[in-house]
Image (tube, rainbow, N blue to C red; front, side, top):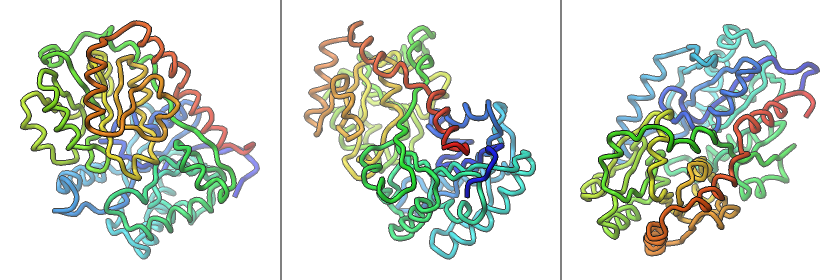
Length: 388
């Protein structure tokens, strides 16, 4: 599979859509760095499960945003990345995985010619790209093992497992962001590497120097804040409801794309849901959190995740309270990690009572100051090259 010469471009089969998902996602940050060195073709995902009305939260909204993205076709983003929104059949079984593999290969081949990429390496995250990846020759194949998709609610387990196994067998190297997932698979792949996540440190560390958003200034203090995707498989809505009621004098601020029913929570008088805020403006909001929270569900998805916002929160410097999860272990001395709703509220109260202190802020920021996306992109570039 490895050619003699280095690759002259990267095809990234992404797990998130370039046009509507967070700009802070790891694939995006890495590819934005890589495109400074060589051409990058970003292939928007064909998803891994179909939205099901009555089963999937806000199914209609998800279908509409995907349709709008698909209609964009092939475009070049201002930062130089070529973005392909492929046509595909939104059916998720073995037969249509092969059909979509043929469709994807054809569209990627055309896009590579347009981008003048002749010897591409492949960086793949979402398993549903497996047949497109294994159906053609690459300089190198790097499987970005960012999540355990078997734990995603609503997926066909045996179907997804087959696709993941196909990629694990094909990959020259598998990159992991979760140590538990790496430990479970290290014996069956050619090369396993723990990559972790980076952080745009300067972006988040200096948010307090930006003007305070008017909407933020209008909130009652203290502010207990969260930003990120509000999904039914990651966010414990019951925990948030309990927190809002237990802290009636605090504002519970939730920033991000809403992909779950927050109706009961939004009826609490001290809860504010803003929807998504542009990545460029986010640090100005986060800098004014009195406490940042990570209100995770305790499930297999969270067990095998590694939230990027952990390092972003630490870079911003505010106190952090989180439901405990394995990848939090290296930061237990900097984050209050708890196991239940009562402990969650008690930890928030303790941090609010203590207030912010310069020493705590400095310690949190120092822990992630060297975790740059530039460094991670350099590691990925080496993985995509011939000499690894």
